[in-house]
Length: 327
Image 1 (cartoon, one colour):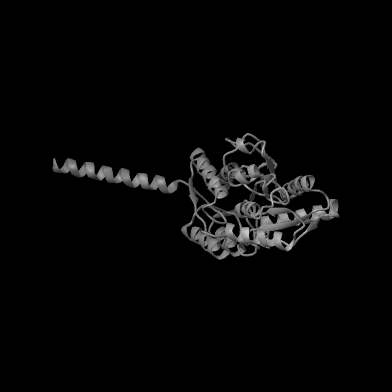
Image 2 (spheres, one colour; image 1 turned 45 degrees about the vertical axis):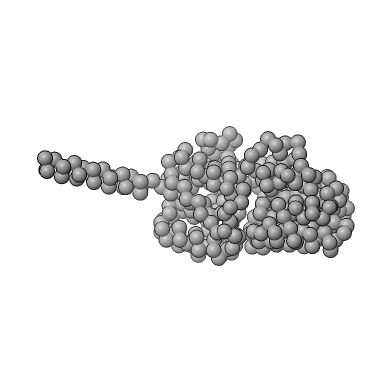
């Protein structure tokens, strides 16, 4: 009887160790957002978790509590130290991540960008939500069509080093210079990841520029602040807010008229595509010019010259359609 118990105990231990080994063999894909706790990145997390279940990987979601590039870089470094097989990052400071990308490569890990790029870092791929060109031009064209071609427009952005935010601002500036010579664009103001700071900057812009007609919230974290500032100032109908805002974040401001529309994409789909891309990199599978991704309806194009995997075209959310979305 004693020997039987010993045999059974040994068998259980072996099975337990085998289970641990299997668990450890499950590849890991991490995503590090610019900050945690906001609806946009929460939605990316949900999409990433769904893809992880679909493609048989472990999904790790971790990021700074505010848009601090030093904290974000430390989190990425910790993931590299842990040997996480594929690590994606929504880059805050594009100039800072090249050394950690090189370290990841030396260890046989895949480090790539999603949502915000660092094109000169050596990253493996950039999972883009929509083309920067499409996002910038769509927003300014929509805004000018509503407020006129001789309007003064202000920017309230997030972190001053965020490559995607700065790219959209630059494209808007170029589009205005090319197509709307009578539009005046004010210098961008940067709120970091703080909605309260965004509200204060938006309020200051309206006070300093009584002829202001438009306010662009360039970061999702600044959207509530811009909408709130317009409402608090009693400027609905005088100043039109817009930005790169999720429907849930902007819905009340769109319904009140503080924001006329917003431009974005489905961040859950972006999170899903990010995890799929990470699994492809782990498996050593090359991206095709056009990719079929189980779980996504549209073909996903890949530009080998730029290393960009593109989710699709931007979506414009208005009072007429914002109720159809929940993210």
